[in-house]
Image (cartoon, rainbow, N blue to C red; front, top):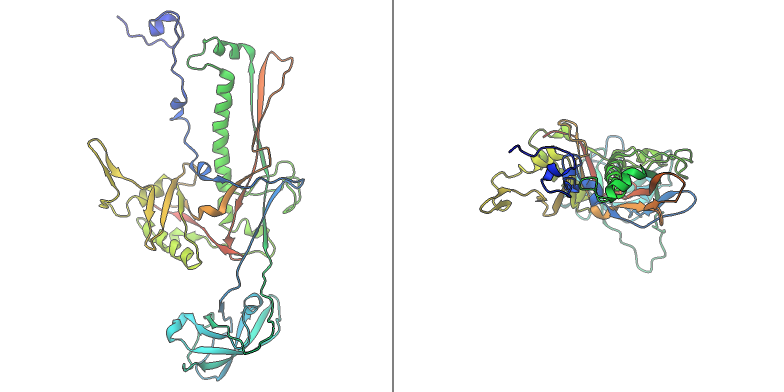
Length: 425
């Protein structure tokens, strides 16, 4: 007897009259559709609305306790008094009588100085000259390099002191544009009726099946937008309104200065060039270096987003790590869903198929998940529109309206995540 290999819907296909092949299912999309992992990881934030169609949020910063001296040539080891030069914003947190120590020499062994005068701001950008008494609290005069970072040791005041200057810092406004997208299904009545009558293998309703397929396609686009989107107001006003064809900033532009360049004054965002400091097989060193930088700024990142190449490289951290070895009668392997870094914080690995994964120029994000949210437009996160008509068929339209909030991405309010680019694996 011949093998039944025909692909139609007649009885000979399944050898049982009156039945139809049920060989189409969502599971069979596996070779066609790769799950957009980054979008699935994002949490939804507060809905926003308004005629401007712009998502706004405020970020806050604290007054600094350390200050970089930009005096040309630094400080010598002979003057009894010296003048340090700080930015106006830094000097606002310095008062007369404050004790400072040079962290570049190590606070414990550094000369300590006491502020005895502070001049008004001058120049553009504004700087402040701070006069200090050298070698106080039993320390000796030392040489200090240009750019030395001075740490506040104490901010003491005298008895019955009066009200000092206000230290309140203004909140820093940030924004992102609304992005509007749609998907459409428009089918003739015969196609829909054939599936409802059972003549389309595995598809009980062609109309709803095609809607779900279009949603899967749109999730891929939203995933890439959430990573790489470049913000544009469309025909709106830059930084104020999102007009027709507006697009949102994705996560990576927030961390590579593309977003920062649209702000005034423009903050500085730091990104790590993997190729300048690391090579193949050094992904562990890179992650611990970035993690240490964030830790020094008070951040404990908990997620790493990367492509398959970097994920496989991360899996080689400790090839013989028995704790990560999953083993039973039929399975052995290394689990890399999470990695414990040297500073004792665990990062979860999000492997995303749509992030740049080209060896030598791959991207990787080290993030604090609490600072990134998808922001839906109020009541219009995803809207299904249908309407009766005289057409010989049926149609549906789905509208999606969202933006992205990424906090703490630059030095104006502190940076809580990093983009690592040009990665090799």
